[in-house]
Length: 296
Image 1 (spheres, rainbow, N blue to C red):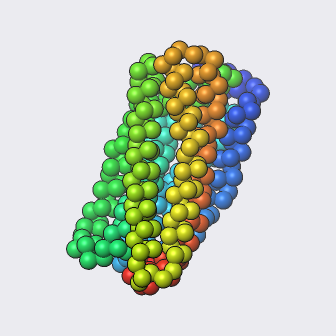
Image 2 (cartoon, rainbow, N blue to C red):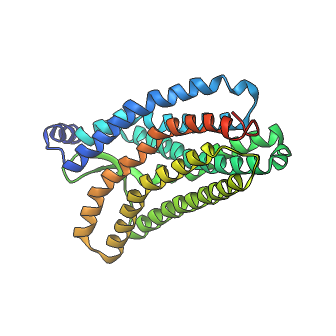
């Protein structure tokens, strides 16, 4: 009986600056990212007939990015007016969001590994076969589904400082909060380390090989890694500050860190917005830079 009154009061309550910034970033990501990923999916549909693995990875990446971005209008509305869509949809959309985000991360890892092996050790990749490639793709989605399960537990409806009902992370205690944030940091740091490792050795192998006369592919790879690194730095710094404030009991620092986290978390969606342009160009560079050895 009290929820409608809470919703009505949230509509007329002033919107915080961090929510305005976050909603603006999300709106830009939705406007640019959704048509960009759809265009990539249409482009890749013509390449799937060739049976190449790289286009299938790119398609999985485009699908995961599209799933990340497609629900943004609801999150934008929630930032500005509060969450009015119910607990079930809160948990469902949160799970889908985490699923697509983890899938995007794992897809980038698999793509870096595949490109390294296929370009520098093509005979090893051929031994994998079509069946092995299907197992890798299905395993990537299943692992993403498992890693995302905790979103169903930690995501709940709760009121923010403006007394708006929001669908957000809700922890039982400090230990659960710190453990969850540390887990997310470990996953992302490990992912970036693996991607950097394969791209570094690919870059070195291409430069040391006389067969690869063009370095256009390695330039694109460097851009991809650097773009992800730049986008993820603020997110990780925000998580580290929240962990420090939680452990030390610094409520003032925690409030500031939580406000900043609303903005830095929105930056994550920029990666899903930029990916279709980077990987579309990467595919074109791969055709020119690998002289027919790599997939389209």
